[in-house]
Image (cartoon, rainbow, N blue to C red; front, side, top):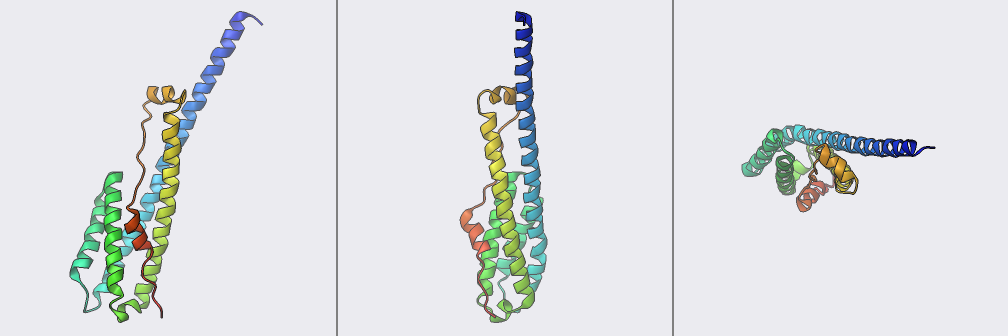
Length: 187
């Protein structure tokens, strides 16, 4: 084997390696976009459930209009949010408002025994679990992607093709847990 063939083989090997790095970065970026879409779907499901929940609570004479207004406002902010940061802030606001709504429901035995309210509460709890799972998956892919674009020699390919770091989707854990751990209702 001649010296020219060895050089050519090395160049082809390096080229194949760089293509593999690029393809992995593209794959991770596509995974991030797909997993963000999953989060978005779950948030939309939660926002779609809010009007039915508000209508159920509103049907009772003794409710706090301020609490319902906060839930409705948080829903509107979530629906109109464009960036991930805005969506996270709206999700945190909604979680806090829902926690207060369900705490308020504890004070009204008729409301907390209402079958429709119970069904909505259970469905919302299920959606909260799905949001948490989708967020974990998204954050795991973002972690892998961010580590890859900062690792040697991958960072050269990432810089050359403008692969930039992505942000994690963070929720205020105390508010998310409060919404998830809604009061248990004994029938």
